[in-house]
Amino acid sequence: MDSDDGHQGTAAGAGRTETDAATSAAPEEVKMSRLTKPLAWMRDRLPVRFGYDAVDDTSKRRRTPRVTVMSEDQQLTESKRRSLIATTRDVRRNYAIAAWMIRKHLDYVSTFSFQARTEDEAFNRRLEELMEWRARRQNFDVALRHGRRRFIRLAEACRTIDGDFFVLKLSSGKVQGIEGDRIRTPTLGGLPEGVDADKLTHGVQLAPGGAARAYCLCDRAKYGSGFQFKRMVPARHLVQHGYLIGWTRFVGFRPWRQRSTHSRTRTRISTMPWRRPR
Image (tube, rainbow, N blue to C red; front, side, top):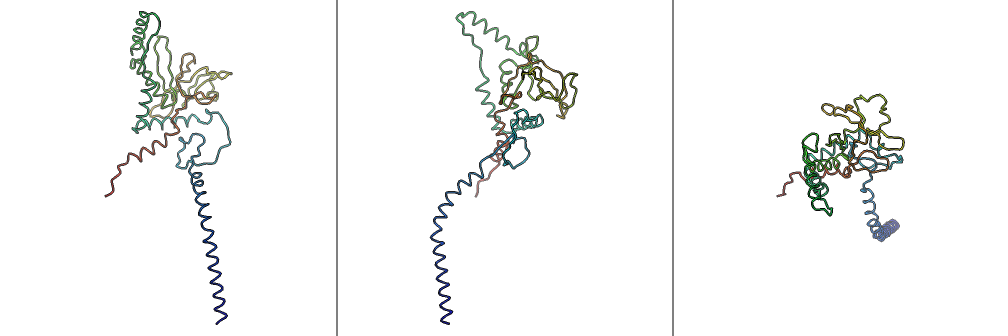
C-alpha cells in the first residue's frame, strides 16, 4: 500500500509538472498565434484575380496563378466580350447606384459648349452661330434623333458601358453612331470573298504594320441569337471612341468592368428590406 501510494504520488507530481510546463509555454504560443493569425487571415482573403473573372459563371474566384501571357484581345475572346457587355448593360438597367455613377461621370466629361476665342469678336460670334446650326439634330445626326450635345453624351455613355463606340462619317457631312458590340466577326457568316474570318481581330481587319484597315459592321440577329454581316467599313470613315488598354488591343475595355459582378452582389444586399429587431 505504501508502495502504491508512493507511485501514485509520484505520478500526480509528474502530472502537475507537465501541466505547469504547458501553462508556462501557453503565453508564448498565444502571443505567436496573435501575431500570425492576422497574416493568415489576410492571406486567405486577399483577392487573387487573373484574366476577366466577370465572364466566369462561378462563385469561386480564387484560383492558381496563370503562366500563359497573351495579348488582351486574345485574353478576352469575342464570346466573352459579348457576355461582358451584356452583364454591364444589365447592371446599368437594374441597379440605381451604378446608373447614378454613370450619369455623374457623364455630367463631368461630356457636357460642354463650343466657344471661339480668336481676336476677332465678329468672327467668333459667326463661328459659334455656325457651330450651333451644325449641332442641330437635323444637320448632325443622320437618324435625325440627336443633336451634337446629346450625341456626345450618348457616345461617352456607350464607351463607359460597352468599352467603345464608333462614329461613321458620311458623305453628307452628317454622322451615324454605331454601338461597339456591332463591330465584330459575324457569327452567322456572310463575309465577302477575300475577307478571312480567321484574320479578323474582333472584327478589325489589320494591315501588316498593325494599323486598322477596315471594320466589320454587323447587324444583330432577331432575339439576340447572333450577328449577321452587313458590310466592311474602311477605317478612314470610322472614328473609334473607346478605352484601350494594352499596346495590341483593338477593342475598348470598360474601366469599371472589374467591379460589375461585385456591384450586382453588393447592391442586392444593400437594397434588401431589412427589418429592425424588436
